[in-house]
Image 1 (spheres, rainbow, N blue to C red):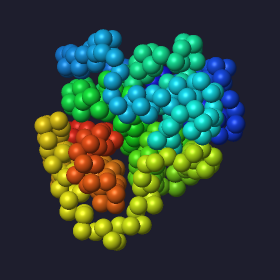
Image 2 (image 1 turned 180 degrees about the horizontal axis):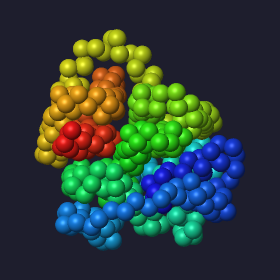
Image 3 (image 1 turned 120 degrees about the vertical axis):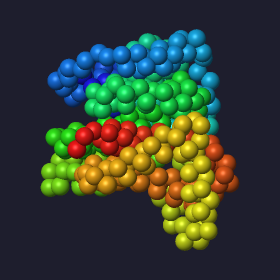
Length: 374
């Protein structure tokens, strides 16, 4: 079973049920879990255990130990994401009093709900709103992400993934937090791998829908992935458009029903770009500083070299697919940093390392492909 696909399918199913005014009860949660398991069953791939798996296991064990002994303390995780899960579990609804600001102030009220719905499912089954059990969901996403990369690209690529400090140990956005950046990166990576294989357009579309359901940045990234999917699947992309269209429409409907949040709308701000073009150099420079900062340990320099190697070898399909997602993800960040009403440098410093997680999968793919003999 693909654990990541099951996590995405469970949250997406519950969101659609909520939009259709079905109460998020333990029974509905159980049905969503069963649907998720059924949709995620795939043949098990045989992989050989090697010495590199030791390098893979060490940071995973460190994250597991940290989750056992360190209380959840990241601000966004506790103040927004996990609080939404508690609101859903308490009200059994994604449009109830919590989301109408009838119970408390929820400043990020319109954040997508895939991961909070999965966390609420755990709360339903445990019979408690305690966040100590749901935090293991985020650890599971981290481990499943590494396992998916290991299956697709090998042990060294997976080891590199789990040793990136921004993913394994960074307090804001890392595996020990309740942020949703690793989940978004994992779902985007799942969509990318599906496009690379070119086998199932509908599964690709499902992964893209999970991306849209996970974070506010997920919707523009989902559009980038669809462009990449059109290139990969050509005429077969038709079945891959169904799930993303349903996801986008349901998100629009849900946001129209709940109290508005206080976060900036990227699509609205994009219309102000013409008057803010002078901020583009600062956005590019600020993001570039983070791509080579110690927290990424020159990861993105290696990714750039890998893309150049693919181009020189004329491996155009690999180069195009990876470049579309990496370039599109970086472009989304630059647009956001240019159009924002925040103080630009503050927003970059608080979010750039997390946003880079979203496109780590295609970068790992480019590195792996560039090292293989032609």
